[in-house]
Amino acid sequence: MGTTPRELAGAACSAPGPLNHISGIVYDAPNINGFADVHLAAGLTQALGVAVFLDRDTIMAAIGEGVAGAAKGVRDFVYVTISTGIGGALVSGGRMLRGVSNIAGEIGHWPVALEGPRCGCGSYGCVESLAAGRFLAEAYGVDDAARVYAAAASGDPRAVAIIARAEAALGNLAITLVNGLNPSLIVVGGSVAEHEPAHTIEPMRRAIDTRAFRVAADAVRLVPPGLGRDVGMLGAVISARERLAGRGGWFL
Amino acid sequence: MGTTPRELAGAACSAPGPLNHISGIVYDAPNINGFADVHLAAGLTQALGVAVFLDRDTIMAAIGEGVAGAAKGVRDFVYVTISTGIGGALVSGGRMLRGVSNIAGEIGHWPVALEGPRCGCGSYGCVESLAAGRFLAEAYGVDDAARVYAAAASGDPRAVAIIARAEAALGNLAITLVNGLNPSLIVVGGSVAEHEPAHTIEPMRRAIDTRAFRVAADAVRLVPPGLGRDVGMLGAVISARERLAGRGGWFL
Image (cartoon, rainbow over the protein chains, first blue to last red):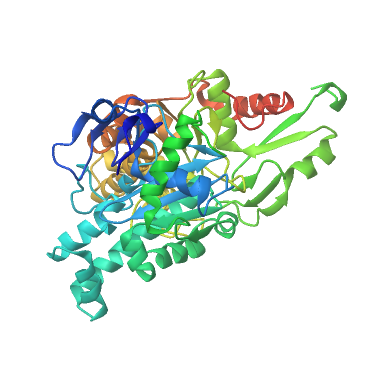
C-alpha cells in the first residue's frame, strides 16, 4: 500500500507454537505438517528488510489484551483461545510467563483426561484434542465444528456426547487455570468461543463456580476479548511496538 | 529450650492451603475438618510474642529449595509434594507465583481426569484424589498407602489398577507443569515420592518424555529435594528469614 521498508520500524509475525520469540524459531507446530524448526523471524527479516518480531499467536493476543484490551491494568490474567485449536498465555504478577525455553503457556496441551483421541502434538487427553473445533469435527466425521453443534442442538446423541465431553474438558482447563494461577481475569477468545459461548465460556464458569477453590473462584471473571475478533492482529502490532520499546518480558 | 521471645526475630508457620500469606488467614484446608477462615498468623503472633510468618507448606518448601536446596539459582522451577495429599508451588522467571488472592499453585487440585472420586476440596478428578497417599488407601479400603503398594507388588489386580490410575494422574500433572510452565527443574518431595519413586517420579518422567513438547521435555529434570525430608521445616525457617529481609515476593 505504498509503504516502503524504510518507513517501518519493525514488523510483527504471529505464529502457532511452540516457538521461541527470542531466537525466532518455530519448533514444531502440532497442526501444520512439516512446519518444524523454521527460522521464521530471520527469514522474514531478510525478505522484508525490517526487524520482524515473532511470537506465539496467543501471547501476542494476550499482550494486546493486557496493553489495550479487557486486561488493561490487570496483573494476573490468562488469555485462552478456543478455535481450530486451543491455546493461551499466562500472565502472573504483571509478567508474561515464558519458561526456560520460552514455550510456557501451551495450555491447549494440558492433559485433562486419563484417555482420549491422539492429539496433533502426539499426546492424548489434551484439552485441544477433546474440545477444539478441528477435533470436534473429526470426532463426528464432518469438516466443520458448526455442524457438530447443530447436530447436538437437534438432539443427535453422538453429537451431544461429543459436545458434553468437550464441555467437561474445558471445565477442567478452567479449574486448572484458577487453582493454579489464581487470576482475576480470564479472557476467552477464538471463533468457537465467539459462536458457542453457551458451550464454552458458560461451562467454564460453571466448573469454576462449583469445583475450584472458593477464594479463587470468587476472584475471577471470564470475558470476551476487549479487542474483539481482531485481537490476534491487533495483538501482534501492539506486541511488536512493545518489543521495539524494550518491554519484552513484562509489560504491566 | 531456654530461648525467649526477645531473642527471636520472628517465627515461621507452615500450613496447608489455601491460605493468604499476607493476611495470615487459612481459608479452608481440604483435608482438615473445621480448619477454615482461621486467623493463624495473628493468633500465633499474639501467643508467642514475636512476628509469625505464615505460608503454605509447599511454598515454604519451594523457597527453601530455591534458596538453599536443589533449585538454588534456578529461575524456573516447580516444587511438588506427593504425600498424604498432593501440593506444590510454581516459580517462573525467578518469582513465586502468588495470584490475585495469594493462593496460586494449588496443583494438587488440578483436575487431570474427566471423572473420579470426590476430592477433599469438593471437586473430582483432582490429581490429589487419584494419586495422594490418603486417597490410595481409601480407594483400597485400608489405612495406609504402603499397603496398597505392597498389594500391587504382590499382583493383586485391584491394587494394581489403583496404582496404575495414580501413575496416569501423576503423568498428566507432570505434563501440565512442563507444557504450562516450561521449568528447568521439578523438585519432587513428600513421603510417597520418597518411598515409591518407581511409582511416582518415574511415571512422571516417562509421561514428560513421551507426551510433553519435545523442547520443554528436553529442558527439564526431576530431582528429590536437596534439603531432604526436612525440606518442610527448613523451608519454613528460610522463608521467615527471607521475609524478615524484605524478600517476600520474589527471591531469585
